[in-house]
Image 1: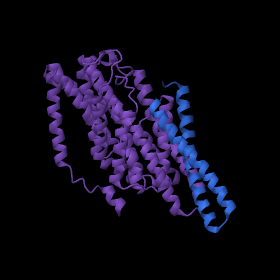
Image 2: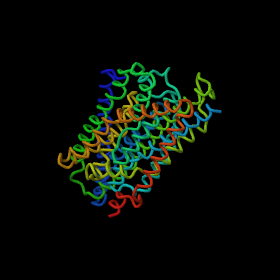
Image 3: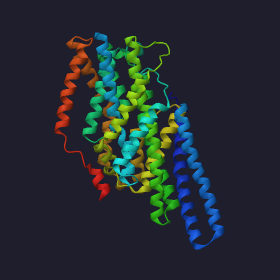
Image 4: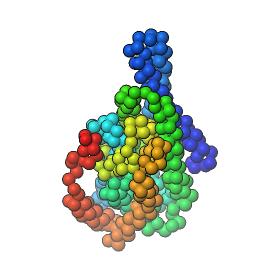
Length: 75
Length: 370
């Protein structure tokens, strides 16, 4: 249960999951805000680019939440 | 008849512990959301309570053992379980009184270990189990969460630092609602199971359930879920205030970094099979999110008091569990002992509730509304 290997796994997965989630969510917010700015400025190309990125980041975040719930139920 | 009474005393104590576990840990789920005004206080604890209730039904893999691998499970009796619960409830109440977040799981383990030592001596306690399942995770949890939340907030500030603050704040507040909800669900799933395990163990010891692969009765699941949800809904405002505003004054991004990182660390660790204390993780995350922005932003005195409370959890709950077992044994053991201990607890609770100041409106609600 608390072998060095398990401990290392917890630290690595915890770091990746924690930093990854926060980073992805922040990128999603940035993309959404920039997509909004582009739409207001009438820059269609930039809007599509930021909206697509926002969609990807939001989907990743939702996927992480879904995986967390799945993991909770099946643990 | 006498064993029936003892069984119901243990069930009542387990549900009382479940209730204190709920209100003690409400802060882990809602403190940052309330502090950054992502949610209104009452709505935040209502959501947390409902999700704790739902979470209790999500998984029913109850091991029917408590402090497994830490004490000699063959030597556990209902009197020891009862005394252990008393120790845990005492520590939860005491730390709540001083507004200090501390681990309810560690309190329960401490209580059972103390009662076991009083009953069977030190030989019934597995030191390596205590080290591996309690001490190491207690060190890893806050440090890992501190590091993760610290790195996260630095990256987050770099990503969104030059954007207009309005939509960014709204975005992180939404994220906090999601991460807080996830934490509440995880809390209900993990912590209500501890109570279900204790009650199942009591029913097996009583002979009401088959010892081999006992099927958990629905009333056990429902009552455990209800107790933790009611405890959560009653809101441990003192601890919420400590975690939400006394350690750092956080913005929405910091609140999300602390809570989101905390949720990710808890669930990742749980997935690996290395469960960490929600309290230790979220507290470490809050301190990390504050310290990464500016070291002086953290009130280190408050953080130090929390660390002291964490160190004292096992010994203090253990001592109370040992005293409860000794009192119970002195009165005559069996059912009479726990009845006498119950009477003492009832008197202490009555005193605490009567001397408690007016709880509504809670201080953090005032701050959030201001």
